[in-house]
Amino acid sequence: MRRAFLYLALLAAAPAAAQVSAPSTAQAVAPAAEQAAPAASPALRSRVQEIVAILNGGGNYATTFSPAFRAQVPAEKFDTIIKQLTGVGGKVIGVESIAPTRPDAATVRLTYERGTATLRVAVDSAEPHHVIGLLFNGIEGREASLDAVVTTLAGLPGTTAFAAAKLGTGGPSLVTAHNADRALAIGSEFKLVILATLVREIDDGKRHWTDTVTLDGTPRPAGTYMFQPRGTKVTLRAVADKMISISDNSATDILLEELGREKVEAMMPVVGIADPARVRPFLSTAEVFKLKGVPGLAERYLALDEDGRRAMLAGEVASTPLTAIPATLFADGKPVRIEQLEWFLSPADVVRTLDWLRRHSETGPAAEARAVLSINPALPPASAAAWRYVGYKGGSEPGVMAMSWLLQAKDGGWYAVSGTWNNPQAGVDEAQFLSLMTRAAALAGQH
Image (spheres, helix red, strand yellow):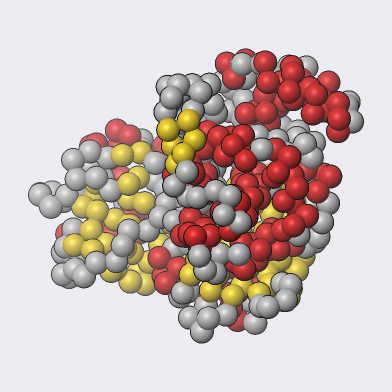
């Protein structure tokens, strides 16, 4: 809900000053385009070895990283992330490869005891060649099969569900499943249903990607359009891009309002959601934040039937300002009513939704939906390169994490992978789930 996971981003490389990019459940960071480059400089190679030493508990943070980097990522913060990585992957065994994009910057793959990590490193071209940029793309596990991924998922605290399917001319054919029909909170993955509704409208000729929405100046949840002035015009394509690629909540609510709640609800059985009633009324992000954060709203809302809830959304909830939501909502990392106030779909539901999007975006204007889904592949570069096409959507909030991919193999075959983890008692280990799910995506075409 807050974002689409997923990369564990420490710092984006910057030539003059470090730029912090470390959300608690990080949004996916699209990999930079591959470019031909000369060999890595000796200074870069040396600093990579120093980073390995620091990741394994040694080295010298102060002498390896630039003052600007250390100012934005203090040693104690860096240590916290190292512990998270170590908890998932164990110790770093060695450097698997260094692929330079220029002499002082490279994509590096590290071999961990229990996985492989991809990171981007940049060093200052001037003496003493401090590290000025570092970005981790998470750790991909070493599980040898989808069954092994499922075994690990099944042992996590709380409830997990998973589905991997081969897609063809008929319905999806499940090849590996674990609680595949179990509807769980999915965070921002609900935005796939909104995208599907838009695609259907475009496919029917009722709307066009270039159509514009005129904003009324209403404050919205965090995102690009949070405080846009009245009269601002935005295209449907721009709003859809942001809704999917960076899970922009302001863009999501704009598109939901433009299409209409009832139309999106009517789309749920069309894309194959087994229990649409569980997701009705189909809530906006602003409505969920208000219900979770404003005292008394949730209790009154949950006591009502569907008609009563619709009336309350149109009345009391709509009239409650966003400023009434406590700034501390989610700050402690504890789950908030994730079994009651969320969007509830099963991995099988999500797989069917992705398959519907695939089948209805083969040709014509609706084909742009594939471009929307592929802006942010949420895979390390090497894993993404193994596929002809990678589309992705994920979601999270405290106690909730979900990741799903639409994948086309080099031979043209299509696959979908979807996994969810809910724990009402505590936040989930995002790095571990990322490790498992990116490995699942890598293994999806082996069946």
